[in-house]
Amino acid sequence: MRIVVAITGSSGVVYGKRLLEVLSDKHVETHLIVSKGAEEIIAFELPSKKGDIEKLATRAYRVNDLSSPLASGSFITDGMIVAPCSAKTLAGIANGYSDNLVLRAAEVTIKQGRKLILVPRETPLSAIHLENMLKLARLGVVVLPAMPAFYHHPESMDQLIDFVVGKILDSLGIEHDLFERWSGR
Image (cartoon, rainbow, N blue to C red; front, side):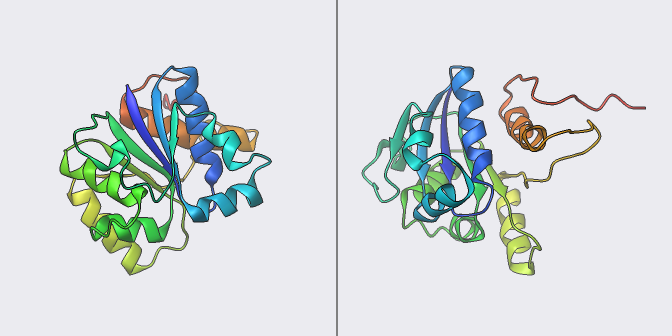
């Protein structure tokens, strides 16, 4: 598998980092883009630096590198995940405003009919956010908000993070054991 992963400027960059760790363990080829806003949030929220996160990916690209292979539909991928997906990035994707590599790669993913998964981490949601999500959902984009469940009785922050990452993997059809699945009462 070949997956594009973008980390954008919203709280919750740990979701993108953990996703890269799991995909690396599963030997999935990953192509990473980190937005400028995400760089600042990585420095604030994680003990890691941008370079540490880039090492988890097969290849990393500069956010303004529109000559990257990711900017072309001829670069075949199995999909793209934006985790977390900032409201700004969501709006750019929903409205075809492709002024950086994250937005262009998402546009290419949509136009090529490939799987695009957005993990918004914003609350509360405004009507504008909801309209952008609805517009994208109608195009087949998976909108997967970072909303962990509690039926598996998480005992740590890592278990809450793994639940969301597991849901991303489910959407990609990648088997995992990151959380205990609901089996009823």
